[in-house]
Amino acid sequence: DTAVSQTPKYLVTQMGNDKSIKCEQNLGHDTMYWYKQDSKKFLKIMFSYNNKELIINETVPNRFSPKSPDKAHLNLHINSLELGDSAVYFCASSQGQGGGQPQHFGDGTRLSIL
Amino acid sequence: KNQVEQSPQSLIILEGKNCTLQCNYTVSPFSNLRWYKQDTGRGPVSLTIMTFSENTKSNGRYTATLDADTKQSSLHITASQLSDSASYICVVSATGTYKYIFGTGTRLKVLA
Image 1 (cartoon, rainbow over the protein chains, first blue to last red):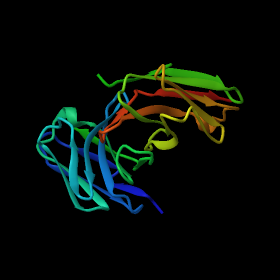
Image 2 (image 1 turned 60 degrees about the horizontal axis):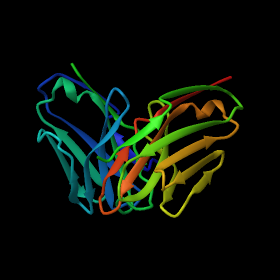
Image 3 (image 1 turned 90 degrees about the vertical axis):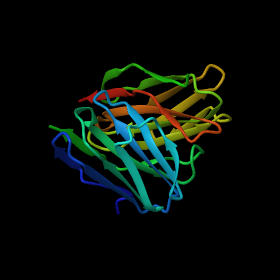
């Protein structure tokens, strides 16, 4: 059983389009995250939700809008896609925030902007 | 500024050999330090988590050490296997925040 699943795995689209990435976790965790991994493989947090409440919003352009319909889901919608948005986006979940519990990551969504 | 730096950037070793990866951080106040393994095309997987009071933790052939005074950690891999080829990422979190600060990782290649 997949613990953290993201869809789609690959996303190729043109500049200016709007797209969404979905994430679901079946671990019963109360906290979910979105990370962006750039071409240099550096992971940077974008958003974090705890019990559907936004707790981290890291200077991300407002073209990115997360939505958490329930504790098990955290979706990411991106408007007006730009070339610089090309990256791998990872969803993760944990029980609690910042403490001694590990984060569980999905396998990423590879976004390519043409 | 909270930062996490890892060295070396990349490393090539022969199967069966041991190796040690380094992580230096300036995150304060320190809460915990994690090591993750990221295989190509996959998400990171947690190897170890250490809090301030712990100075060593093992997970199979992986042993992490922590010196909170010098703000350094190392990940030692014993008897390396081909499947150890991956990126190893050090992550530090600060007390009172919900943030994780990621290092840029060490890319390890194990050759037969």
